[in-house]
Length: 196
Image (cartoon, rainbow, N blue to C red; front, top):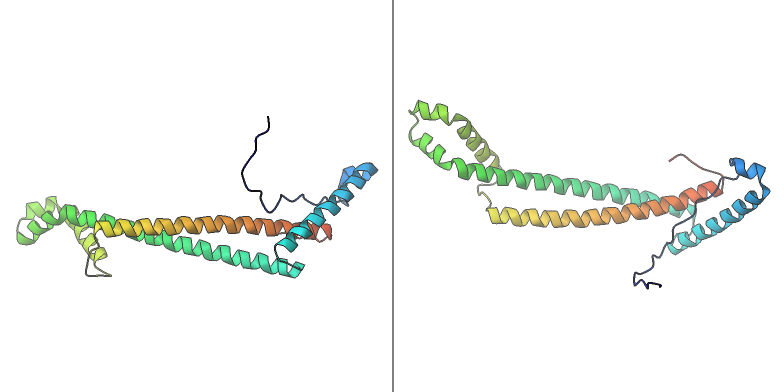
């Protein structure tokens, strides 16, 4: 029983690696394996060249330039993701500050109205310090404390942006890996294997 798959075929099939004929011990003792390896390398290199041409790259220098551009794109995406994560942390801190302000507002109000009540101040000193710190952090950039709904909406938007950037990052990394395989096959076939 055969199952028909409706999945679209990948435009790029996996590349075979080039076999290093000069350094392989099997090739030295088996002429049949040497013949097969030579044929395999020619086929793999032809497939590599075809896929590189399908990418729109006409030369090895264009391939290296595309690799550099892809690395720059990945670095920019990582920077953008880090910036969004910092914004998310900031929004979470704002939410926590808002909670602290709401929770200890009455304590602060009583302490402000009754500054001579030392027993109260001693008992609720840590809460008052938390309240003052939360107020200072919350109002240092703006005179208005954002609503909980507004903070949740901002967080949701930031998470959506982060997810889309992560998708782009994964796609860019796959493209970079594919380009690197092309370059590695070129280098191996031409006998110029370079350390990455």
